[in-house]
Structures are given as structure tokens and as C-alpha cells.
Amino acid sequence: MEGKEMKTKSSFIILLGITVFFISVFAFCEDRNEDDEKEVTATVLKYTKCKFDAMNFDRAVEESLEYFVRGHELYITRYNEAYNCCDSVLKIDVIVTDHKIVIEELGESPCDCICIRDAEYKVSDIPSGHYVVEILGREGTFEIDIK
Image (cartoon, rainbow, N blue to C red; front, top):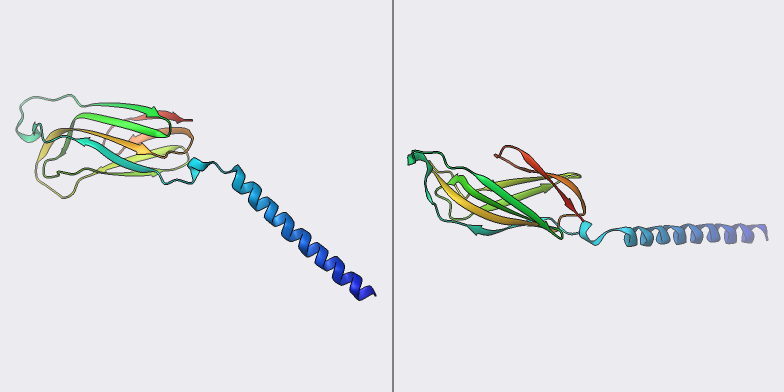
């Protein structure tokens, strides 16, 4: 009789353990935020043709940057920026860590000339939080809040 009671207690403890495990897994899944599951991506919206060859221009051109946040998207516009003159396509790589977004603008190929262009792109599916944004190759950073 004692052996049967031990098996019943063991079965009950195992069943209880499994139940607690599944309840905690489902509770964790419900607590996760939907925007945490998406991959952060970048899309080029506009990349102008070469305005002029920066190597053969005799005066400085002022670069500027504008940005705004809409929902979980960061929109960036860069004016009069120096880019590779051989590239017809701009690719954007984005790395998001706990509180930092690092953006790298990449061309297609190496080239021996620089031209002045405008570029506009958006970074999508950024998880909620406060971020410092850095664009590699550009001095300075800026901060954004995604809610």
C-alpha cells in the first residue's frame, strides 16, 4: 500500500511541476511586447542623383540632418551629404542595442570620387524605449523616444 501512495505522490508532484512550468511559460509570452519580436529594418525612401562633384567644387556646402519619429519608425533626411559618386543605390544597416541605434550608410562599390547628394530613409519596428542614435561617419548623436 505504501508503494502505491508513493507513486501517487510522485505523479502528483510531477504533474504539479509540469503545470507550473506551462503556466509560467504562457504568462511570460503574454507579458512580451509585440514590437519586441519584430526585426528592426531600414528602407531608403529617396536617394538623389549627384548634385555636383565635391572634389571639383570650390566652396563648402553645409550638410544638414532632419529627423522625426512616428510610432515605431524613425525618419531621417540628410541634405548635401558627401557620398560615393559611383553608387546609384544606398544601403542602410541598423544595429539596435538596449539604448542605442547605430546606422551605417553603405554604398555598392569603392570609387575614387565624392559627390553631394540628399538621402531620406526610415528605420522601422524600433522597440519602445529611449535611444541615442549614431550615424557612422557623421559627428554627433541625437536622442529619440519610441513609445
